[in-house]
Length: 146
Length: 148
Image (tube, rainbow over all chains, first blue to last red; front, top):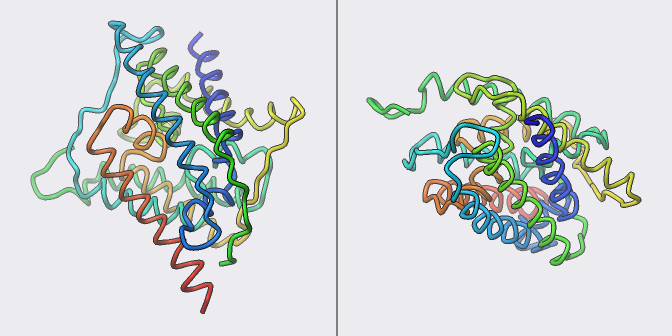
């Protein structure tokens, strides 16, 4: 059941990426190109996704627990700290170079573009590297814990 | 880096696709009680240190993502896609996206969609930061470096 519903959730997410145009790096890079070939479509993707999640979250949180798991697991960290800001900056630079964020890098895989076949393994290596840096605490302020 | 090719403004398709992404985020919360952040789901699937341990649905979710464009094509639709072909650039971009989302604990979906829907100030700070970095990077690559 968990595997089936996990697959369906991913399928719906992927269909959303493809239909919205977010799976196309050219469209993402044009959204980021305010002074050039600007395409504002992605604001509609973010708006539609965030508003529907805002409403939907409040409906499902009326339950005492999720359907297929024991408890809701919602991030409790509130700190706007150095790892968050350094990480978001690195991510933004990479997003601006490649036009891929993590979701579209996966949906692009079956089309086998050379850029995708280079980007995706590099991204997975980066996820591994970032997790190591984070658990190693290299970017934590002295005395802080996460 | 090449100057961009024009892409059509698609407000309705983008809004509809966005609603599907939001629906998926609600499914993941309602079914598994989790944030539908793709970077976090991939980290959990890879069982990286500090990541969540429930790997079963995460692998299935990633499989669903990969099947989605094939399903669109099987249904007679087209999947428009132009991927940059500067391979060293794409390697650097992938490394930065992976490292950055791991360090910053989230990406466009985790902080963007799910975090903003939770009204998280931390996620708002992350979104403002990666958007600003993205705008600045494209400006430099296309209009300063590209024009030189």
